[in-house]
Image 1 (spheres, helix red, strand yellow):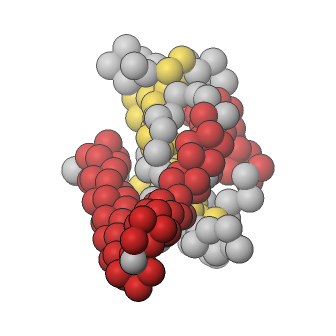
Image 2 (cartoon, rainbow, N blue to C red):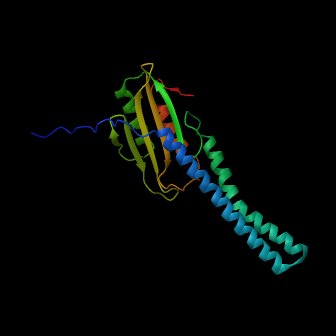
Image 3 (cartoon, rainbow, N blue to C red):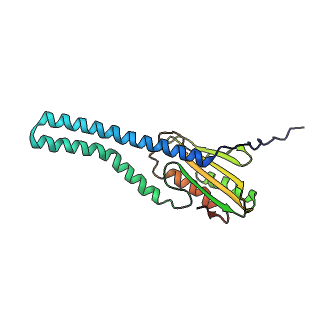
Length: 200
């Protein structure tokens, strides 16, 4: 006789996904500021070297062009990322750490089936159950990304409806430039929930 697997118990204090998301947002903000600062300082120093080496007004103009060129190395990808992110409307907010919630009256089995189907459609691996309310699924490393992680939690709301939380973020904690991928993945899960209404 084979033993039936026992699901993990519900933790007394499950991790607060919103709090973890906000912590991740702060890390990405610091990473972005550091990247812009480092590139800006490097561009400024290189511009000064070019100006000193060339001299005169033409050297100054060339130095400014070098500085602007270095700043564009980040500005252009950031603008492309923001434009792509804007195409993925839905309950999840913007940013590489995308967090959103919906409520639904659909039965839990139907909601979980929708979650699993949405994750599979976005080519995430088999979800790993961390507790009866929460699953975590990941996408592998690719040419465009270090990979992504999605956490989905389904809880009973105060009004009897189910509260579904989806949180998608890069697997690499400093990958703050994601071209809208994580907002897309979180919204793919949330919009797949039958009868879902966004939580403000």
